[in-house]
Image (cartoon, rainbow, N blue to C red):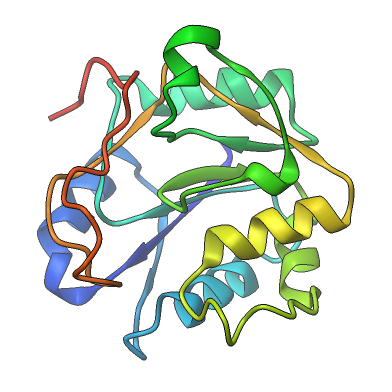
Length: 184
């Protein structure tokens, strides 16, 4: 099974418990600095050179998430895979290759062996401009390396309804248009 790292905030422990019930053996990296980017960088350190599914604590999973995700990863183990999206094209086009620079959302995605380490070493010039933009970091990394990613539809993860702890001005309705069969 592919390793899973959950980036979490202590005040969301009930959601972390939900994930751990469904993802035995997952590793939890808690936010200790009230900074999503620092937590992501720590998750990348924990991942090392292993292939890893990275996810946030405010995710709802599709039933059979592990089997479904492993199947998708098994078809493309050497590429980044996005398991959450809010794009209208998801309904019209379905699963597809996307240019790396379009990578968006840090809710639930897969990085192949070595990519977490490479991301950690990436000299990202926009960090001051986007201090919580971990998805922008991934997008810029993929663009700089001329890599595409696979966007999987239907999405295997859904964003929980609610206020963002990163930025309370963000919409509470950050929802996938293709997510189905929640494991509640």
